[in-house]
Length: 268
Image (cartoon, rainbow, N blue to C red; front, side, top):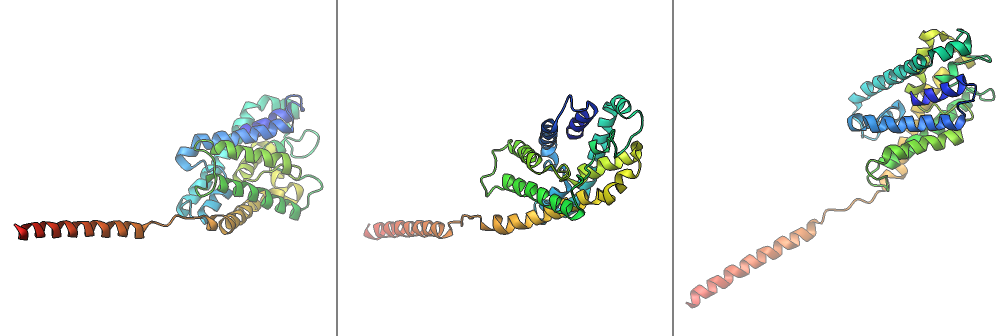
């Protein structure tokens, strides 16, 4: 809601109450707060690509994955509906009641991503694989107990800063959706709320790229992190030989004490 809300405020005010930086802040803080709110229950999973990476690495049970994804899509859909309800009057004033995806008064991009004119299908797919891969790679480093990590309770803040970094460096092509639920959920809402099926057909049916690309990026990042980082953690070996030596010394002490007692008895 914070993310789409920041875009809505910027677009509907015609950039008088917002700019790209405020949008980056909205999405970053929104993700950070979502992690704080749901972290104790689900681990703060709000992205199917991140959840899939956790499944691959054995950090999330596979039977939980479909339920996480459903909840993520429903949450994104509900957030879009909340933004539309909050700014309904502003939408009607801005568009004169005509909700469209393209044109000077387009508002579909408030809720979902659409490519820039220069972006090809392949370029868009690579954009999403790389962007989501960086996101997942950094998240894995932050939560990895064998790595430097982040102090307990600060992890959501660190993840929010990742989104900020991606937003200011990788947002030119299509606005860094990086999350199938965050993009497809609101897109479905716009389809039923008045924008129509144009939300799927625009830009040569762009809609599937911010769904498939992030999932591929999450898998690639999980494999890379496991092979290049997690496999190389130093694990302390249990000091069994030392414990056995102590046990042997204790046994020797017991034997010597019994021997002394026996000698004292025989001498008496």
